[in-house]
Image (cartoon, rainbow, N blue to C red; front, side, top):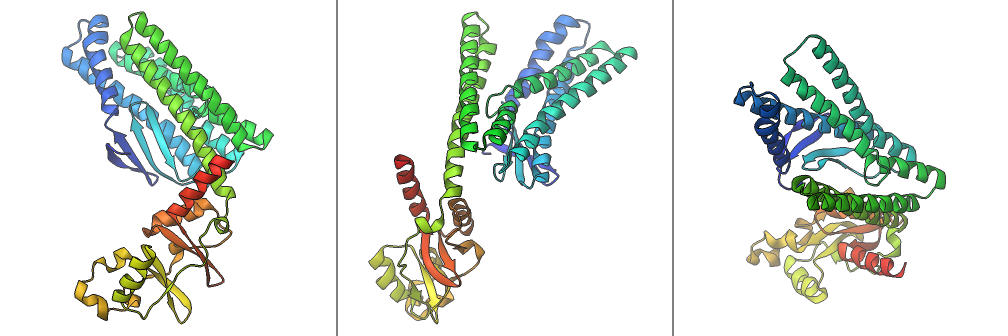
Length: 373
């Protein structure tokens, strides 16, 4: 995520801290140091209040990290890779490689986070009892009370059955399992996410009118954030559902113009790039596709070298991320298009060129399909 700093890796997952989280860190530390501790423990030295406030904020950060890490580890166990976890102002986001393709996987991943938060609640509760019995300095107990309560709030808030909260994902998994329709399950739970977001916004506005400005604005932001996520999540599900159903051969461009590898770059530019207005062409040798040549392929060449350089010397050789099968779906084609950096893939079957698919082909097909369907 833009504006994030990398903290390190855990289990191969990159942990990032978004700069927005510094706002939470500052608010918690400042509030505890200047308000809570001076009012409740007037004998405490001022510096100690700042230290305890900072420790409290760090414990909160670790609780959210463990919550997201639990989701991620279970996700990896279910065969879905997680590239990174980003901790930001509203909590944390685990970037999964793809959405679960099975309701049981979705259920396990969704429950992992709240179960970790519940475990932390129990651990901090036990620790608090032990420390109380040992008569530890009372301000230190406040930290354990605060973090214990934060984890309980994480459990209760995240288990609200509103997508994309964990509770919404649990409900979606159950509806998906019993109805057998992911799209319908997502529609229902996203609708509940929208309603929950609006309720939080209205509650926030109500608090503002009562004079509780900071908490009111906070609820408005959280409500707006959940509402936006629920709407975008439903749209993403629709797109993913569409992508997995549409096969490459339904929208690929056929009758592809290919060039022979022995012709010069000069001839390529004059007779193909300028004539057909395409930025890349498949390259043939003895009737077989050996790769692709693009405008970028020849940019490194000096102009005077064009007439004595054959295309085969600047070709991007055929490899997996340049090819798709006709029966592969849009998701697989898009993934390869973004991997290869060429902006298109060749549709190959049995070593023969069947067609070509570009980003523009996909976008145009999706736009028309979404309007008609």
